[in-house]
Length: 424
Ligand SMILES: Cc1cc2nc3c(=O)[nH]c(=O)nc-3n(C[C@H](O)[C@H](O)[C@H](O)COP(=O)(O)OP(=O)(O)OC[C@H]3O[C@@H](n4cnc5c(N)ncnc54)[C@H](O)[C@@H]3O)c2cc1C
View (cartoon, rainbow, N blue to C red):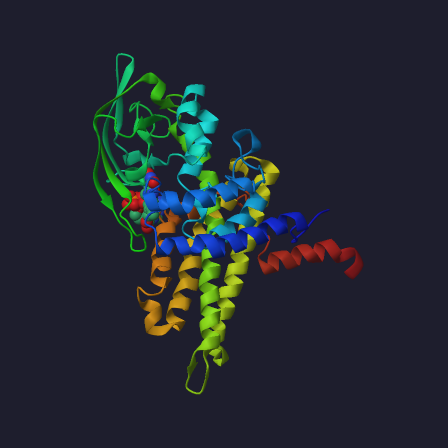
């Protein structure tokens, strides 16, 4: 039997290196650079490329990947320990070669790409030479794929793609787009959509506008139009009608990696909350001495530790089963718990900092906005809670008894029968 909460010393040494490197070299970047995906910005090249090289030399590049793709093949538990450090800094994922949506796009290219697609798109993506975009959501709805209307229609051998996509993150920096489109409207949405790879600059692909978020330095979420975009047959990713099978591979890993990094961001808010409580006097004592502030600190810590344990156990189960379907409930649960966790801890940190906490001079309002974004990106919280409930209910059976076995008089009568020989 093994039931362990310790990190082996060799990996702890790596974590210590990562922690110091992120704190000293990576955290400051967000104050002088724009978007982490703007990889052709001359300042990015000067500041980020040398750090990426140090990560490669340390053999910590793209650790979410298995050795066959050039990663360390650490597995999810080690990745969780690493990611919770990376979560503290906006630029850490790109410095360590594991940023979304590229990590997920690489995963599906590795699983479903042809040798030619892998050579053209996957290899430079893994090397950090290009970034990519995943375009699924449409302006009329994201949570319900049944409303997606972007169509790809056969024209001879080719496909012709038309429609609009919404909130396609990093489109403006992307070298290629993975796009979901209806190819067979005669069957259910889950069987009639396919994935296509569309290189940036393809005639007919246009960014209508870029949408910004409260905490981001640049507007990076694109409203896209595909106007009669002609695609060759070899631009399909996976088989016709397989878009959802392909997308699930991508989202399973991505969701849990977001959760791992959220631990780091929430810890950053808690660190600030504690430091402020020990630093600020009011009404004759430190904030840290006031019970209502102590309650905020205690609630934050225990919620964070509960969440961390759930994430770690989910990571452990992914490693154990090597099958995202078997951990669907766990992944949906961490996805659903993540926004509230970050929201509540960041909100307490904001409040205890008073006016400066609510201002743009502090990061807390941005963290709260990020919490809302986490409750939407990769599907709204409600949808993931539905998954948790449905999966949980599979383990139960209905009772046709008028009074169920746990009804106290019914349970007492059963206990009397069971022990009658002894009790008389
Ligand atoms: C930061 C960020 C980055 C994103 N990046 C990408 C990207 O790169 N590519 C991409 O394709 N998409 C991306 N998205 C879009 C994201 O996938 C959608 O926002 C999400 O799927 C919800 O779709 P919607 O915004 O259209 O909201 P809607 O589908 O209109 O849903 C709105 C609200 O309705 C409620 N709701 C929905 N369904 C249910 C239900 N079954 N039960 C109860 N209530 C429900 C929820 O409160 C939900 O928030 C991103 C979103 C964000 C915030």
